[in-house]
Structures are given as C-alpha cells and as structure tokens.
Length: 107
Image (tube, rainbow, N blue to C red):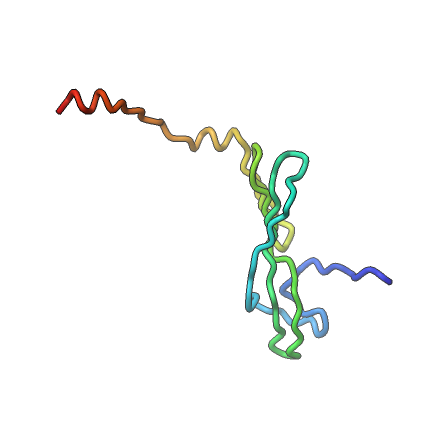
C-alpha cells in the first residue's frame, strides 16, 4: 500500500487547492507514553471542510511537547516556539511561607 503524501499546510484543500480559514472542529490527542526527555506530546487535530467542493478532511493543527525542562510548540506551518528551564526560572515568583504559630501569636 503506497504512503500518503503529507501536506505542509492543513488549511489547503487536497482536492481543489482552496484555502480554508479555520477548522470546523478541533480536539486534542494526548500521547500515552513520554519521549526520552520525559515530555508528553499533545497533538491538536482539526476537521476541515472545503467551501468550494465540500470535501472533508482531518489534519494536524499543532503539536505541543509539555513537561521535563522545556516546552515546545510546533504550529501547522512548521513554526516552533521553545520555553526552556532558564526562561521558566526568570518567571518564578517569590514564595512567602507563614507559620500558623506566628499568626495565632499576633492575635
């Protein structure tokens, strides 16, 4: 059985080549096993319908790898965004710890 030719842009109709602005429906698929870096892959799928020829197809809208030390988001057009642990550390807030004894003594 021959392999399907994979399209780069999921918004283009495979039959007539018309551009579809957005999918009619989207849903998420979560991978059951993490990759070697300990990240879970979340794939966002979309169901499209061509306005000119009424052809329906499914395609990957985006993929996200979450967990471990970094987060990767890959869009439909191949654009990638990475957030590493160094950037996460700069976004951390200070933690304030309170003792119940101190609060009760003040009253």
